[in-house]
Image 1 (spheres, rainbow, N blue to C red):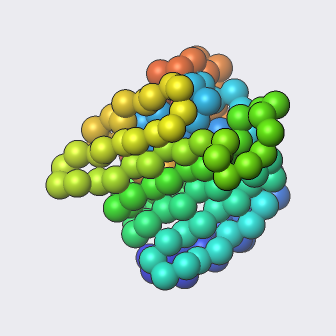
Image 2 (cartoon, rainbow, N blue to C red):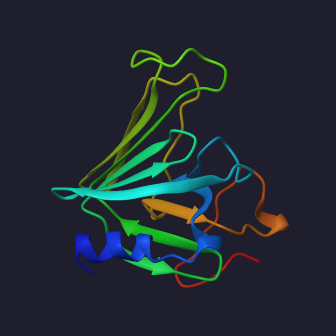
Length: 153
């Protein structure tokens, strides 16, 4: 699937699936799947898929491939890098206060850097990106679980 086709795929999602809990390399954004980021726009810049969300979050996925859509989520299994930007609730908005997680795949490992107080540890073999519009209550804790081709629960 080409980058253009992946972008079109996001744009054609049914309205009920235009948002969800976000995860990067096996880590839930915000620590658990209890937040819903609503997709505002999808764009492409060279080899980067850019997802902008209603509350200001931005996800940039470089070299996305191996896309899977299940009843509960849209998953991108591979990418060369993923960057997520956001603003902390209640903080004065400025470029200096903008938070980020930067994931980069090097060989078989995922390196991560952040300017946020909570660091995260990527899981080997986990998808590069997931937008889950449904998470079964048994899987609503901070632990991440995703098997290829299977919905949770």
